[in-house]
Length: 320
Image (cartoon, rainbow, N blue to C red):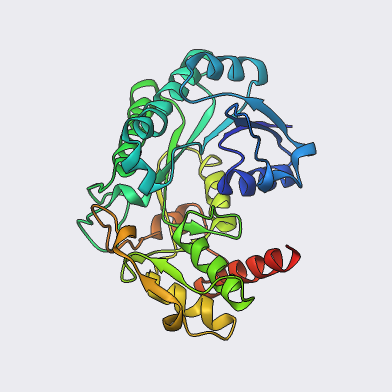
């Protein structure tokens, strides 16, 4: 039975990845920071099948202990301060966790067992003010937030350890991926939850920032399979993962509200308070390398993703 360590297991991606690895016969070790309130909401249904241990990307010693005790063959580094607006309020913390945390994990692997296969969760936010459309593995980075900057550091330190120490260190440059498990602070979940809530008469409006911002949105459950496939290759590499389609926030609103027989124009209010200091206007992937080498394809369409999220929020709110 292979053993995999997942940092950030309580997050959206961590929960879907843990499910996938369990189905493939892995022993799954989930790393979670110690906090006074434990939130296992996304993994409650599998918590008895995995091992949760305390660890922190800000603490080198805890990472060394993890690797020495559990002897994993694969490490998936999904933990990060990953909410872009928060990175403006806490830029130093974002850098310490999202950038230097990658270095600490790579150093721990190099020290304990450099044969461990390592996956780094890079982000399309690294492209920021895009230098070419669509974005591929060779597209220059131009991040537009402290989060994006930190992810660029994490990406390049992964490449450096790969090339300097002959480590199997792979970087997945994932474009936006959503699901019913997405945090409420993210715009996609704000929209799906608001559509359901307004339909049920619980709220009356939704305030959003730039409705014209465009993203390449896919389903998180599809994207974790790409993560696993990257670590099954003969050689480590960088891969862009996305749908190759782009949709505006406005279109997300339109589909979500229409799914519950509402017109988003009657309820969505643009509010400058939610604009980013530096906006990322257009992100769209070129996932041809992943399709060719990993044989990976997204299974869930954009419309299916939006309606899946709305249906999930409807069901949850009705229970309440």
